[in-house]
Image 1: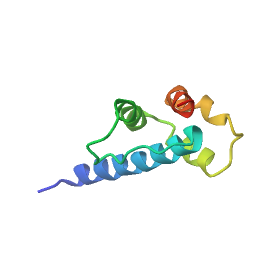
Image 2: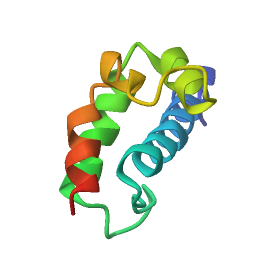
Image 3: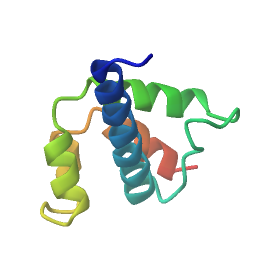
Amino acid sequence: MTSHTDGGELARADQRAMLMERMWEAVSGGTVPPAESDSLTPEADIAFQRCLRCTRAGSCRRWLDGRYPDTGYREFCPNAGLFERMSDR
């Protein structure tokens, strides 16, 4: 039996995975393998763990929705450097 808390944590993880995927694509221009994939890269795993711990999901959503300057994500995203490095590949 799954508790209400487990469902809330799962929903939060799903939401963060979606934000991370959108941010990864927006900044790096590439795509991140889905979390359930066996091909999840170490970089994607690190990024996902950072997203889970991030307290700035609202800023992330607003930036993705176009409410910040193009480089505004650098002010709040713990994965900014990683995403930018991925765009160089």
